[in-house]
Image (cartoon, rainbow over all chains, first blue to last red; front, side):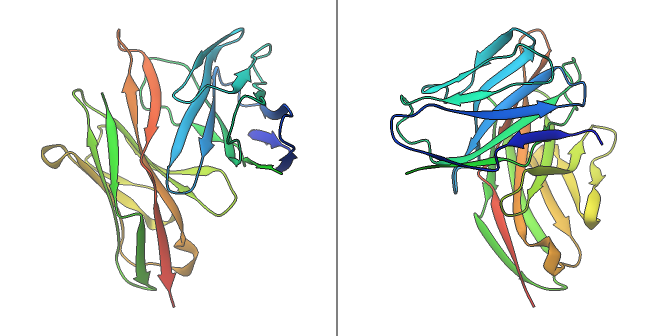
Length: 115
Length: 117
């Protein structure tokens, strides 16, 4: 089955630690995205990548880093510089094209809690 | 800049009643609009999308939405609510980059739907 997987489902971090969230897709999508979700705030874009070895900052990139070494993978690192990282993190992907009608497909999410 | 507003962070209906979730957008160009549903602790699932082929769009699970350009709205409806419809619903609009290439999705803050027995 094609889809997007995220791991782990739950992640606990101590203050001062960096943690990496995994996102893998086998949909042959070009573009991948990371969102942060907090209650009542909708989804906010952290980083996105339209092609391998290239990525751009979203609206709330401070304290986060990403890499895109393979088309299938787009890991997100939450660094110690992110002061309030407790949130639900969602990864998404889609085709990169000039059509605006392509929907994004979402993974199941990772819930990160800072202890 | 494009934006989307969802009126009402929480909507409660009785089972069998009409569901109406409101979404208004601002866009200087023809918009690309989407509705997603999220069940607790899960990712988002596409309900439907506006493709300009028809103003009334039918989606999964009996939901539909009507695009009204004059009102800049894309409200989501379902004639008869079911307990399984309890979830959070997000409206989204896609930006258009300079040159016309596909941009990013901008999401509303979401509306939580509760269904009472």
